[in-house]
Structures are given as structure tokens and as C-alpha cells.
Image: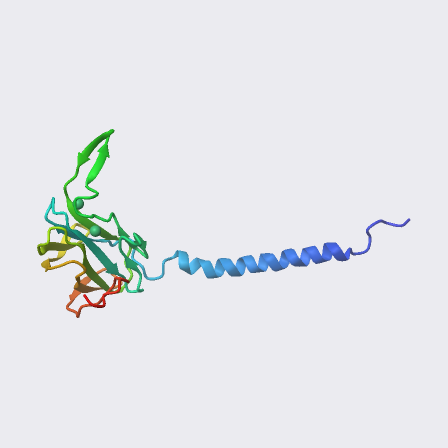
Length: 200
Ligand SMILES: [Ca+2]
Ligand SMILES: [Ca+2]
């Protein structure tokens, strides 16, 4: 009696080998992906809040720019960069209207906030840029940096005067170690914006 399919089928054999190859590749990929999901030496428990405030009701538009140790820059142009997040672009009085339960309310606050949602050890740069100076007067800006965990703690405070439109100042550089410890570093001015500042 002749048995059907008693010999090996080259097509089935090929499929089996392809399946084996894919299984092997899958395990290799899992091996490479795994260390990334552990976030290396990033401490997810530590967080910082960087805030700039200027006088409420002023029409002037100040922008907060922050660069992380990997060169990622957060600003109104990119509100999420690495572990940095900007809440909103406060443009002075232009965007101070908020809608609460269908009612328009003027929320006359001038503030931009960047949060560090995880710690990448290294040096961070904090800049302020005067995007618009509708008041035509120098604007005092207050910068605070607070450490959130384990309890809220102020680690930096300064007041600077932004004298005219398109001025960009490095307020500070600071270092975070792998445990999230903050050290302020005095530094030279560093431009973070992509604007062409020639002739200013
Ligand atoms: Ca702004
Ligand atoms: Ca505002």
C-alpha cells in the first residue's frame, strides 16, 4: 500500500524553516528591547517643576526654553521633549480666556511651566526669551525650580529683567545626578532658540 505524503514535502519544510527563523528573530528583538523598557539609569520617582511668572495682565509674551542632557529642547514649538513637558504657551493677555461650563472667564495669569517627569542625569539649561514686548517696558520675570519628590522643595529662585523683544537669556544651568540631586551651575549665555538673531 502506498501512503500518501509519506515523503517530506519541500514546501512544508521551507515554511517550517521560515517559522523557526522568525521565532529566533523574535527572541533576539525581545532581548534588545528589554533593557530600554527598564529606562537605564533614569529615576522615575524624581521630578522637578520649572516655572516662569511675570506680572499678571501684562501683554508681553515670554517663552520658557529648557534643554536636557541629551540635547532635547522643550518650548512652545515642541511641548514634549524627552522627559520634559511644557504646559502651555502663555502669550501675555492674548490667550488668557478660558471656557468654564460654557462661560468665558479671563484667567489673567502670566506663567509657563515645564515639568521633568523623569531624571536623566547630566546638565540642563534654562532660558527665557522675550517673544513680544507689547508693553514697551522691561519685564521682570521670576524663575523657580521645585523638586517634587519626596516632598515639595524649592531648589532655585531668581528674578531677571528682560529688557526688550527677542532678548534671550540663560537663567541657569543645573546638574542632576542619577539620584536626582540638584546642583546649580553658573554659566555663559547659550542660545536655545532656532531664530536668526543677526542684527538684534
Ligand atoms: Ca509665551
Ligand atoms: Ca497670560
